[in-house]
Image (tube, rainbow over all chains, first blue to last red; front, side):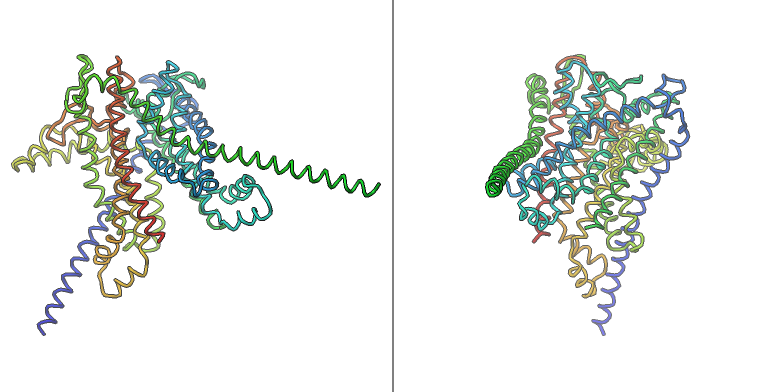
Length: 287
Length: 329
């Protein structure tokens, strides 16, 4: 009888404790997701106000004047595109070495480790690095330096996904090709790349999403430019840097454009990530 | 005649094949070394980053020596630079952020793996992962225009008032409510690293074998007991690794913090006061820095930041690697 009572009490205590912690967990989810929802909601509300055609066709305005973000958008596109052009081939080849040629090489784990660190290294440090290496040598800020800084951020993302995706390709496929007398590079190109294509493209998309919003490394490499500029040898405007400058300014119209720019970047990043997700789930289905 | 032609065609085929093989061997060696060079370039980049940071900061470090990391003065006019206040700001904001974000993130991860109705699990998980990709400048602009004014008018006066008579805490929550400052920066960091922590811990929680979890439930454990005594011990290394990864991110975070930290080179007891972090100092001052020593001091800050994050990230990766091996076995 006494043990029954004790058991009941213990049971009740356990279930109460369970309820308390689970309640806390639900509260955490509510707070976290609610908080993030509020941020996105504000962003949409504030950003939509200034969203019109002029944003895409007109240059960044002087204070207190009408204008758009056209030069910043184009600058961002150019630098991101160039960064992908530089970073993707190097990254893909490096990932290829790690997954195909050097799979059992002692160097590979070292490279993987360093690459993972590079993957989450503070982007402002990469900006400083490119400043030291390129900007001081060239003597001035330039779009090229910005693109190279972004390429250094693209590289580890591509290396990582390429290696992961190539490792997922079944070895039997490679062996079948090798049994036919195919040279290794042919196996890599015709079997490995073909099977891992969707995954590698996903990695590139994720890398683009990552650099789209990068501000810190551009601050002292590409700097900024109020005017239309496609000259890679001159300072180049970019959406994130313009947002940074405009948001910290006291001018109402600049701040409004900053919100609109922020909304544009978020939309771009989200749609890139969704696209990457759709692609990778498709390739997962085929496998 | 016919025989001869067969013979010659055979011979030419042999020659062709050996030539083709030679060509294959050549292209293969070429491709192999090309990929190897690219792979090594990853190492070279990291080495170059370190080298250029050390080279750039040499002037400041040799001028101020140990004073650089022990003094607080940051004065471009008298050319005196001490990095202790940005280092302090970086460490304190990250620490406060982790203090809040880790329990919150674990709570959400537990919710997602144990409590969430299956119908919601996938969409919520995807939403969290998408949010992890939102650029930090977005959080910064939200923090500056929405969050800081809200804290200034509603939360900070309340904090100051309610702790006014508590010893210790009254100096932690002291001073006028600026809105921007250490606390605001920490809270923005929380919301920034939260999706990371959730995404990683959720993945790690899912590595727990279903058998383990179900046998604990079978013994009559409550959900909390399963989490506390089975899931968490099993995934401890991975959870800590994930949190370290988030810490690395928090330490190096620039844009979100630059907006809301206030950029004041001083150490105050109050976490409501403006301060600065390493990354915010560099972002704010680099483009306007004049003079070699000033530049060099900023790069030295970058070197210190790189050093700290490198260590944190290395530990994080090592722990996650250990978990992978454990899962592999």
